[in-house]
Image (cartoon, rainbow, N blue to C red):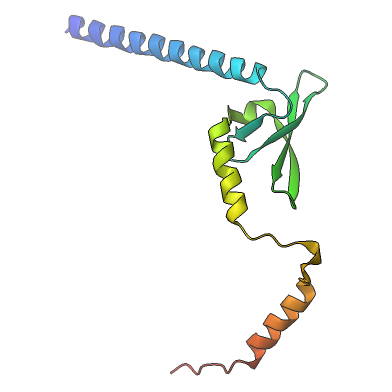
Length: 136
């Protein structure tokens, strides 16, 4: 009885040791990746946002943040995230795939004559002019 109990306790301690060792290796790998970050690199955050690093900031108290630019040529947005929110560096292959997708998308230029107010008014008029169905 004591031999079985001792074996189970020993197995539990061994599993805890192996888990801690695996976690330490993952933390070292993540730290090395964060040290390699440079301006202009494409990164992916934990939440799935893919963007290009515009600035790496050292805040007071040792807090490190990253300013990320995401979007396309016409609409871009900036967000400031903690450096630990960076999950991975996006490689060149996925950048090529993204460029192909952007070429296939239709682009609306400012000089195309697209007026948002006119579009909304037209769609509202069409909606109002359609006869309503009677529910039975």
